[in-house]
Image (tube, rainbow, N blue to C red; front, top):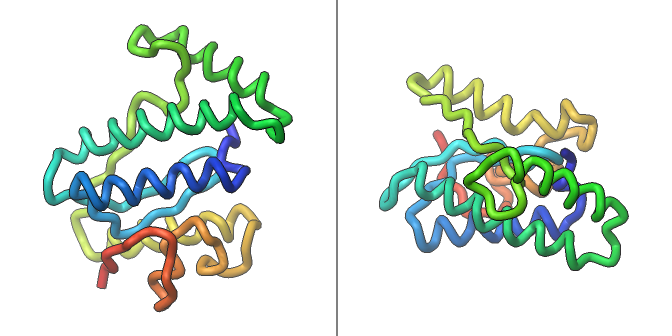
Length: 159
């Protein structure tokens, strides 16, 4: 579902990434938030990566559904909450809503060639979607950092 169409929802995700960087040892090498998913190239210095992702998903899920519930501007509110609740009923681990998919799709980047390919793929997503002409024009991505501009999230550049 295209949830990340409003800046408020995107900013919740960005703020959550920042929190995990500052407090949980998350290392972000690249990221891109699309309308219905996120791409991350990440590592960690403290907690296990799966614990950080679990907490990130739990927090963003609660905050974004709350923002949707409280938004007077959200024309899709009833439908979105109904969809989240419907999916939530299918999983006994949920108390009410299911926002994110239960699983992640981790891929270990084992070579420089693979890293470069994934980095380019990740940053090209908004271009392929037709949202921008150049990757660095998309605010919710680390592409800006890779051309020397300051992005929204602290990124460790892959060189």
